[in-house]
Length: 206
Image 1 (cartoon, rainbow, N blue to C red):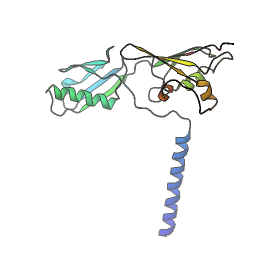
Image 2: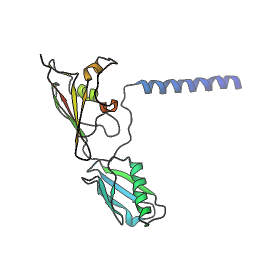
Image 3: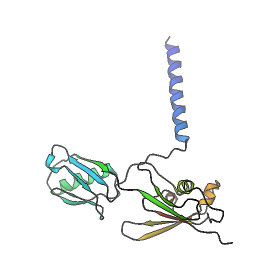
Image 4: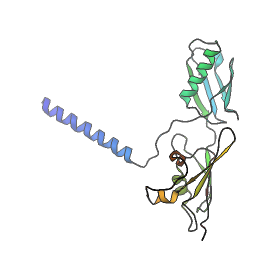
């Protein structure tokens, strides 16, 4: 009986492992830890410190204004990172010895990107909150390239936190065709869009 039980147990584990492998191989967007944006409304609390609980928006400087410690910068951080940052602010200010901070998003800021130029449906598109969207995904959502698009020189304009502008050029056409030698002048992670990115598909010069 034990031998039969062991065989059945191994079979069950094998099915579970196979199911996990199939899920990983699917085209479903990968989950991504949420990064705090300006105008997010956050609920911030400190364990056993009810007077410090607050609901506030992240301002244009990327900070929240908290009781006792004032402005604390949380822009771009995950919720767990923001909890550590705020806890450190209370400790460094000698207000609390070992604060346990909880940060939750009460209301998400709008997260959109725009695509212009030679695609069939240019416009603004919402980014998923806890998963990623690539330039290729966005081109697909916009109906694909027009017949006159220069898909080898798609430009992504990204405004950085310090106000400067970064322009990245990607060979999206080769990515669509599955070519491994796509000539991208930007970093590999430039394929993942950030809120407020502007994607422009130029017209092919004939």
